[in-house]
Amino acid sequence: MLLLIGFHYHAVCSMAINFEQALGVHPNTLAFRTQRAKVLASNLANVDTPNYKARDISFEDAMSQIAGEARAKHQARFRSQPPKIELLYRNPQQPAQDGNTVELGIEQAKFASNAMAFETSMSFLNMKISGLKQAIKGQ
Image (cartoon, rainbow, N blue to C red; front, top):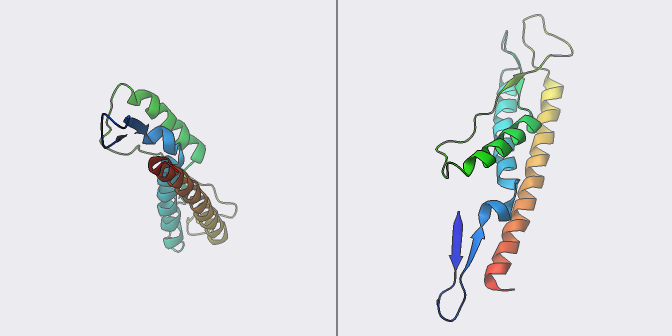
């Protein structure tokens, strides 16, 4: 996505900002953290569901997939849908007799850790956006 800046073509030189480059990996990280929060919330909601299998998403796999798509994006400029990230099943430390693999304490800890990582990424993204605003205003 490009933003052209400059009101008077003769007086002010127009400049293009590549937002993907300017914002870095942070928008993709936020999208991953949002998807992971949904998966972990589903695990927590199904803590008492017989035979429910706890799932998760690998951050490394997701970022690797996004990096591969970024390389392919040079060929196809627009993508119609977000990347599909593979859900992984987690092996429990203490399996339940009813076949449920959700471990409440572990899920709560992973959910809290993911929420903190989301907040950190959001803070970095806000700083990047603030920097862009200052650059646009010429400060």
